[in-house]
Amino acid sequence: NAGVTQTPKFRVLKTGQSMTLLCAQDMNHEYMYWYRQDPGMGLRLIHYSVGEGTTAKGEVPDGYNVSRLKKQNFLLGLESAAPSQTSVYFCASSYSNLEQYFGPGTRLTVT
Amino acid sequence: QKEVEQDPGPLSVPEGAIVSLNCTYSNSAFQYFMWYRQYSRKGPELLMYTYSSGNKEDGRFTAQVDKSSKYISLFIRDSQPSDSATYLCAMSLYNFNKFYFGSGTKLNVKP
Image (tube, chains in turn purple, brown):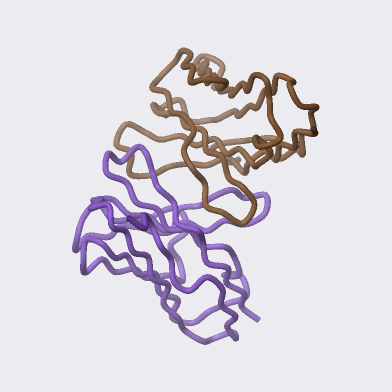
């Protein structure tokens, strides 16, 4: 039982490049979330999903897209990376929608 | 104005001390209040949650909510060096879909 896993763990991008972050959970959770964490800002919700095939915008969705084609996976895409997207990205999943289980994070640097 | 305010610290205490961590918030509609612990370079993990006002105790940890003052607290009794981490408060409306996090307080418990 791996819980929530994130791929990759680290990535460096040049401005304008694209990439996809993968989140996978093996707990059969309905709800999944993508957050970014920046110094002094706490965790901010980017997008979330309340079930397979559904997605919704969070607090800071601009510049990101998501997809939830399978219940266990939640993908976060950056179509044209900008330095302002340098951050640590966390994925989380939840069964009851109250207790969230977080992944280990992806450290992204955009130069 | 941020929805949730939290003193970033750092807070340094000797082993065995009682620690008090606090958050204030602006949205009176928040119903659920949570505390997460985050070790360095790891994802947050849920410590406790409470619904509406009142106290909740779990071992050495006590969570307190004062909705009239829009103020929540986490108390740690008999603090241990293993409690050294960043503590994040989080809040949610009745529908759980979005969570609002404080920026975190870094705690250091010295042996």
